[in-house]
Length: 114
Figure 1 (cartoon, rainbow, N blue to C red):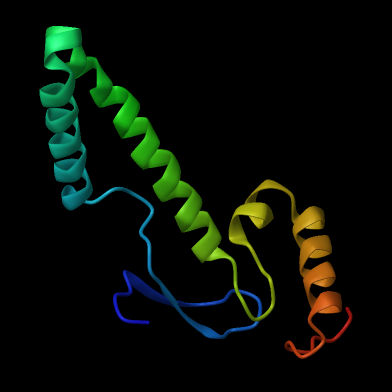
Figure 2: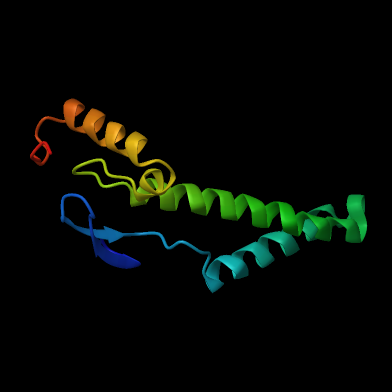
């Protein structure tokens, strides 16, 4: 992977991982939000006037939502199916999801039953 934000290990299978997305927006993202808002205002100024600036929160929420969903998708281990966000919410459900992933992908890592 070319641009990794963070290098870590999977908590379950100890495979080295490189995460492409960070948890929060960077300063570049905020700059892009500002440029997109100003462009939207310039395009709709004759119709909306200064009220076009109210597109800023909507664009910000859109950026946050897309970025968080990409981060969550990147967080799941492609080798064993472990997802720390599910583990944080419900341990039993996370275990079921990992077992289901391993049944669907038999070439994955082998774990001992405890």
